[in-house]
Image 1 (cartoon, helix red, strand yellow):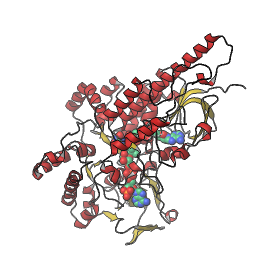
Image 2: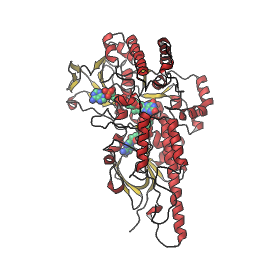
Image 3: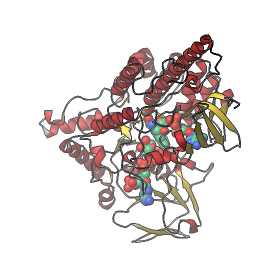
Image 4: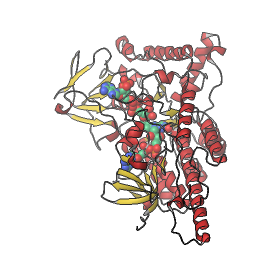
Length: 560
Ligand code: FAD
Ligand code: NA7
């Protein structure tokens, strides 16, 4: 039988932070690599999410790659937080600087991928009609790339304009418009804050109120930038040796080590003035996310702030959350303040649920809100949503969707899944829950080392073959294969469970555990052990000869 020809060493799907860096690394290894993305340019999240107010909630100095030291020190950023256009420009700049676009193909969606055991290749089908046979299929699909549209009766009858924040229509004019925003997560908070001063009226349709703290964004002083530049090595080392990787030192002080309520409030007040959601949650006390009393103290502090900021007591009441402060912590540029505008209202869907959308607007049990524009800030079918829309089949035709269906999405270290050889995921399920660029770098580094090791092992096997003088054709056992073993995946799942033990995040409904989309399974979708521990796990796996992966040492004919 004629052997199947390999078109590429690796196909990388996704041109965001993950795909860009992975291309850079594999190209340095001399492999033939291509990146595809269904977008028309690089950027990923920052290509798609162009809604007014879109910005990072990680501070600028650590929301970037750490591997290009010169660029780190010379690339400009004007504010303490980067806006969507800034991150997009940065990623475009990185692609340009390293001449990466020549190996990228845009407006191209991966539709299907089938593993072929005989050739040790993935056969992929693209929306352009092209097919490729590739050794490694690397998915850099992101955690949040499949938008979640709510299923509300009558939605198709609306005669105004509707849009999701992740697909904001270019040039949409909101001035003098009556706008309804559904959703008050990170995105809802940002878009409401940005739209409120511009529109005729804004109604925020809120299912769960949110705890959010100020970002305290401000322009960057030259002296601060100088300090950052001088300390960038230490900063990036600290990020990788921390839990959440947000560029501040996490507190080791338990809430109950401070007995005075006044002193505790002073700590919260100081954090509020410094800004940043992750810092507020993890920078003052060590146990806000695990100790119920500590959590409630933070909640009370924020609720009091809402009462102080929002002048209308009825609006303030509706905006006050009463569940745990245990979703991805948010920060904002003056969110609660917007509700002091006479043109901005809050609709508490817990009290007056949406009954339907009509031609004229959104109807709740309290009546009709007439609208010109409905904005869906309703988030994403996160993590496996990005994978399940692709038909991925591993060994013996097993589909990834079916493999994940009984338990929810699982993996080994967030990068590999048993039965799916040479499928390597960047930020796959059960990867670290942290600031993402350093987590992405950890995954890209592991994937690059795995490939390097597998290629070397296969080359060794081929050399053995050629010198054996048996005249036998090269067997598939000499094709590089990277595959997680089932027990390693299970053990990693147990590790993820263990790390989330006692976390209030587990008891609070959000996309992190899959509770934002009807029908999704509640499952452990992240590793909560922190970046330092994750880097440690990865290093141990490497030091133990890629423990948890099928042996990749040079093999003899027929064996593996
Ligand atoms: P993405 O940037 O999501 O890129 C994935 C790419 O894959 C997309 O371009 C998509 O088009 C492409 N793709 C998916 N499926 C296919 C397919 N089948 N075929 C072809 N292409 C495909 N994280 C932080 O750490 N800090 C923050 O402050 C922060 N702010 C955020 C704000 C918003 C509004 C959002 C939505 C996310 C934010 N995130 C933040 C998370 C953010 O997604 C990551 O930080 C980071 O940008 C992810 O990069 P990525 O390359 O892994 O994935
Ligand atoms: P999120 O955090 O999932 O927030 C989505 C919001 O939309 C949230 O308030 C949801 O309410 C609301 N929602 C979702 N479906 C509905 C329906 N059917 N009706 C009413 N309200 C609904 O997504 P974001 O885009 O804000 O943020 C995602 C991540 O991106 C964020 O963590 C950052 O990492 C950046 P709920 O609270 O579920 O009741």
